[in-house]
Image 1 (spheres, rainbow, N blue to C red):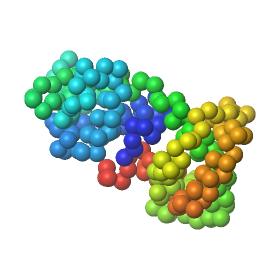
Image 2: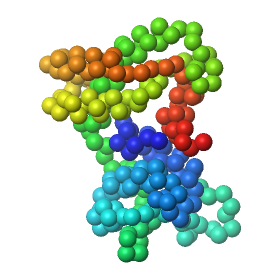
Image 3: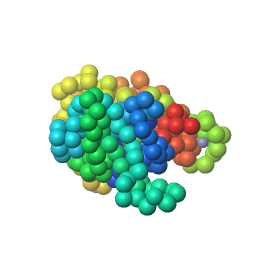
Length: 222
Ligand SMILES: [Zn+2]
């Protein structure tokens, strides 16, 4: 299961959320029936521009209902037919638009940092793939489109490293493809990050399909 803070773009966040809604369907209590999804949607709702008024800060449960305007004879619901409701401890409730929450701006510094840190380790990823040439996917045995998968999640490595280096860069340069990279004056920070990643990253070969499945939905879904 991914985290709301994990995404580099609004579109990615939106698509992932749509996937989750399709999987969950109607639900009278996310807190009881799907605690991980409860945590995810609570985080998502914190992006609502009026989160205080919507009661997101104090919600105790979230339910997913059929949108009242949906044709009652409709058998297969689409994402737009689901309505999210936030519940308070005193029994009051309010509807909330997950789409409004998803549209909010992704933390710009965090987003750039994520890019720069990912690009910085690309050399290590290439080295690993070269050293594993000819190996099959560890999950399904396929030789199709091998990718390097972080067994310990990249996001966790990144967050641990940043927590240990609180004075990290907040400004970035761009490479020839207009991607965020670290500036020359941050070479020492980059050196430490590369060393940290080389020491702590655990990688394995997965085919692209398995890698995507893990990243998008997490094994707890199946
Ligand atoms: Zn596979």
